[in-house]
Image (cartoon, rainbow, N blue to C red; front, side):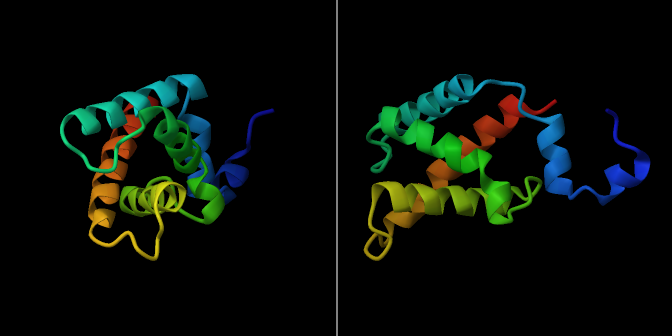
Length: 120
């Protein structure tokens, strides 16, 4: 059933983005994220220690951003949200300190790779 023009206009923009993006499967996205994290570790990132653990958590957080009220078109907000999710999963948010910048950097790398892979 096709949406009529008024229904399209009333659909929140973050939901419209979900419809037009992401034809890749979750395992495909996890592999992309795993490669990004593994490369970051090889290049000296102090937090990218376990690409097998980071990747599925990163993809789940990245894909669920709209449920936390983050517009899928707002890449900066998505990167901050992804970094926060990684800190919560792999570190202590109360004591992460300067490493938060490393989490933000890694989140940016993951976001950019996933976003590029899911663009129409």
